[in-house]
Image (spheres, rainbow, N blue to C red):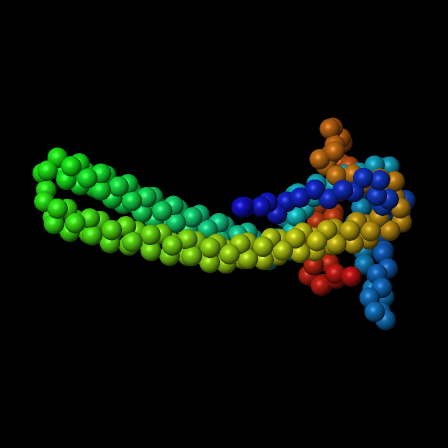
Length: 226
């Protein structure tokens, strides 16, 4: 059930940049009725650069503040769900063993009666005892099935809620990354930004991951989800 928080965000053919060959540029960001001028650092000029989104996500303040907590919740849920399933399986096996023993006892009783090794009255008494045991096993099996259905539904609902939280977290990171890249590339310095997973070999100076991470963290701290 465990799901990784690191994911691939397709950024192929995304246009970005900082002006000229300078190391920084001022980007105007409008929020409501006010305009904030934010300084954005840049790497060396290049037509194509790349970002490692897995790295950015795992190193981001968003993940540190929210992602780790959600990951812990999911791990706790997985442990609890696995324990519940193991418990159900053990109870079911125990009841199955009781039922098999009951069948063997009934077969043995029948053989003893047919051989005349036990009186009819005694056979009837033992048969009544075996029948009560059988009814008890059936009752406990029905109760177990009800428990499995009820608790299983609860666990499924909880799992769906956690999955939704994860999707929301991923969407928020995607949005922060999009805004960060748009700011960094406001002057179209870079003709293309690609995901590191598509890179076979490249000059390390073309990796703008730390630059994007810095901007993502700043946007997160400012609560700048547009």
